[in-house]
Amino acid sequence: MKLSYSILIGLLTFSILPVATFCAGQSAPPGQTPDPAQSTQLPAANPPLQNQPVDQPSAQSNSQDQKDPAKKDSAQEDSAQEDTKKKKDDRMFYVMPNYLTVDDQSHVKPISWKEKFAITAKGTFDPYEFVIVGVVAGIRQAENSYPAFGQGAEGYAKRYGAAFADQVDGNIMVGGLYPSILKTDPRYFRLGRGRMSRRFGYAISRVFVARKDSGGSMFNVPEFAGNATAIAISNVYYPAADRGFSASFTNWGVQMGIDAFGNELKEFWPDVHNYLQNRHARREQKQVPKAAAEAK
Image (cartoon, rainbow, N blue to C red; front, side):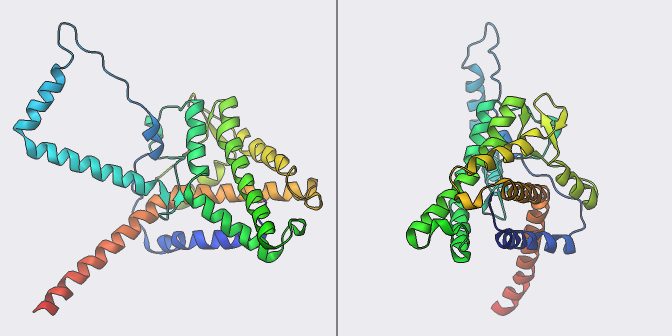
């Protein structure tokens, strides 16, 4: 939240390179990916039919599986592939947690306040976040940001703790507390189709537009108020010299920009992912004839 401009520029540059590569080489319509957030939804159980034993469907299913083992193996293989694909889609660029992204908007059910907090916490305390906070704290230490924290191991520990607290405060406020109070959905709903310029504008607009649990839209109060509340809380543990309205307003603006850029990554990551996979497949196809020729 209190990222310096050099840190922000570095992180955005690192993240946008794969997107730029995709934009230069991709022209096909974007593919659809499974919704990782739907994994939290529990399917409704079907009531047993009257005058019929409860375990009869299970017995019939087992009988069918025994008669057709090939079908059973195929179903298991498809299920394993789907689970593997979901795990891949849960991470942008294979490392960044991406649990709050939804693809098929028309078939998405609202989530409870408990699920909102659970999904937000899952991303907040992901191992990747501990690493990236450590990098941020190291950069701040090298630049001697917040001099009152000092240097050495103690200074690094203070910067690490402050940076991690910033992240926890912001994520919980924006993704858990305010959405639960105002009954909005903290997830990002991908457009996933149409011209790239339209999708780009849509991703930025989600900073200003929130989806209600009822399915409608409203001004994104959780985004604005959540970040403002988190920054207000941060004034408690940052040095007095770094507090004040001006510094807080600057940090709030930077955080809003980071969230907008994060929406862009969520919108286009499946396209980048498909592009990288197709390019890898083409490379493997080219290597097969070469390997066969060398073997001769």
